[in-house]
Image 1 (cartoon, rainbow, N blue to C red):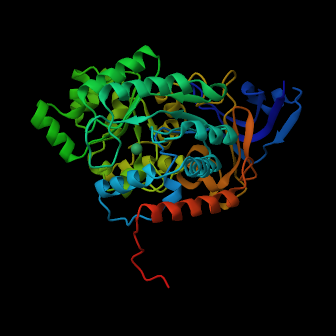
Image 2 (cartoon, rainbow, N blue to C red):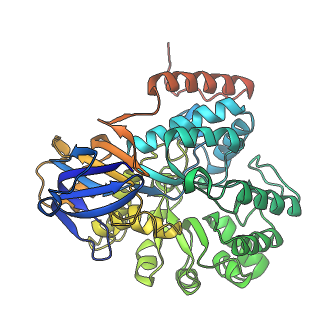
Length: 458
Ligand SMILES: [Zn+2]
């Protein structure tokens, strides 16, 4: 058994039940699991094979990103003009994605994961966009991340270039995916049911996938960023708003993770609370895509109603920013401005959403999301010897409002160090980035996709 001691941290943000912050603290873990968390002085004599000096470090749990399409975006990141409509964006994205080879998807995923880990995100949900899961499992193993996978399915024709399955086939594919991957890589991989959205899945498919998630003891996630057209369609066809329709159909519940959660009214928030349905908010994507989160988002009401929320980013070519810390910052400031009220979404709430809240949404709060004995050793060490961290009095405010991933020094997942001194330990990042650049150029050429910059490039 390899015992590691992280000694003399300036602050340990435990995120335990009492949200205790330990000054001059020490963490000890054996292999993948934390055994001791406390004051350095009390653990000074505890022996360990490896001692990591954490002076001037702030240590947090690994961050949780509850909605992050990992497999396709990095290869063509930044190509889309920012005035592209969400529908045009998505139809291009999925056409490009469908053209990817196994090798391209593997390398692109690994580059995305490298960026996530370097920014302190240790666990994320890929909402079913990965096509070659077997190949990508190699990337997850190599990077050491914790991931929720699945197969994004639809059974309705759609304008987004999403593949359409026959209903029974979509259910069978989901069942096979959960069977094959849930619990993989020493429990670091989980697998869920992942219907794309209520717009492009039949009621029968949604009901069957919910029943499947129930019977297999896993979760279901779908896109629930309901724009005005979706709300209008449900009011016209069913005489109720989308979330209430889902509740009526038996598709909500404590194992259902609604992503984006925009366009809800107060009754729909009450429906989420009543059914213990949980949610992931993606402020970076919403703001860049003009989704109306600041105008229509009910995040303060959801928090007040007791709905458990986590944070996501969406993909690297619509949100572009995939750092969970940026989502944490945005969620803390967005509603202060939208409601002209500084009491909206305090820094502490934002940090909870990025850690223990997100872990709870994923159903993993017994294992991750806080720094406590018996939990997994998923840890982020921030180097506070940088201007962005100084001066330092209140570590919550400093972390949420003035730090970001650039000060991440060390990242440990499941007891393994995957980032050290700010660099990934498992890959030659520049060599990988050059390979993914070549993949992207080839994909654009093969699919005849071109979005030249607005300014002349000579
Ligand atoms: Zn998405």
